[in-house]
Every structure is written in structure tokens, then in C-alpha cells.
Length: 274
Image (cartoon, rainbow, N blue to C red; front, side):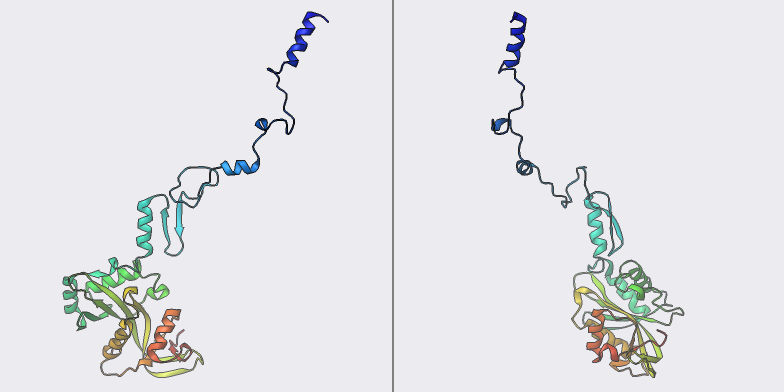
């Protein structure tokens, strides 16, 4: 064999320069890692962590978010936006929007009929009044209680301002007082049985809406507010507890009004026009 052929043969037989792929099982150091090993080494990314801001495939925690409950749009990676959403979302459960000053209370006492008992003040409010309390009520209905009272908050004063408002103010010594409850009532002469649809004539109080602040619910505030309404709405008429007509029936309201009147919802009277 020629010298050139020997050089070529030696080159391909060299163990140092060999590039042959090892056979399975020949040497573990040449084996590719298994799928399990890859999974173990793979970094786990928590895609529910709101601090995660790295863009990658499948990233879902960036961009605007729409809250169906309070209809608020916010950026979930922006702490200020998150705080603003939480404040708006819980606006009906906190006191910020309902706080009133001692000066406001004194002005309202001059403008409206009221009754004060210890740290409780009840106001009788008519829509035609130019008082700032009417403006305060309208602002709360539009911006804060629109979800709490739902449809009742729209035109709650009636087309001809025939509905009166009743406001409960909780006085807190050395702290900010606040509006803790409100109800809207209209005098009517007809009512319809919820169950039988039979119409009855008499003196009725149409309850268009009632709201009590969550912080003071189940403390007889709603009961005392309705008692105040029955007592002074038309002083010359007597309204028993079951004289209220209702037009809404959430579960909380059913429980409350049934307890107040001593009747089940099916026995209650509703508005004739419904």
C-alpha cells in the first residue's frame, strides 16, 4: 500500500479525531437528557403573579382589565390603577363618599324637616328643595349607589317629583358623621297583591328603594327609618307596618321587609302599574 493511502487510513481510524455518534448505551456522557430531566430543569413561571411583567408567549397579565361587577377598566400591572379600582369597586362599602360635615348638617336642619335622637338624625327631603342635601343624594345615586339600587336609582324621584326622600345620618362624636341610610317613598291609594294580582284600595306608601350602609346593617337602622317614614309622611294618616308597597325583591330585601311587616313576599302588595 502506498504511503499516501496509509495516511488516509490512519486519519479515519484515529480515536482522537473520530466524530462517530456513540451507540445507545455505549457511554452515558454522550446521551441527551431525558424529557423528565428537561422538565425538572425547566423554570416554572407563575402566570398568575401580577408582578410578572416579562413579555413571552402566553403572557396574560398585562394590558387593561374590565371589571364586570363595577364596570371599571384598569391596568393590572400599575399599582396606582389597582388601588383606584379597589377604591371604586368598594365605594358603597366604605365611608368616603358618605361623609358629611357638622356645618352641612346644620344647614340641612334649616332646609328640611328632621328628627334627632341621640346620634341619629332623620331628614325628610323633597326633590323640589334647593338644598345641598338633594345634590348630595343625586351624586350618591349616580356615582356610588348605582349598582346597589340598580334600576331604582334611575328617576327615583318620579316623573313629577312625587317621591320623597328620607335620609338617615349617623353622627359620630369627634369623627366624621356620614349618611347611613336612605329610602324613597310615594303616597298611593292602590296596591296589588303580589300573589293573587288582586287590587286593593287604601292608603299606601310605595317604597321605591331603600339602602342601609353595610357597616350599620342588622342594627335596626332600616326598621327605625321606616317607622319614621310611617310617622311623618302624612301626619294626618295612620300607616301600619304592612302599608308599604314594594317593587323589587332581592334576597336581602325579601328578608328585611318580611321581618318588618310580618308577611311573606307573596302576601305583600306591589305597585298597580307593574
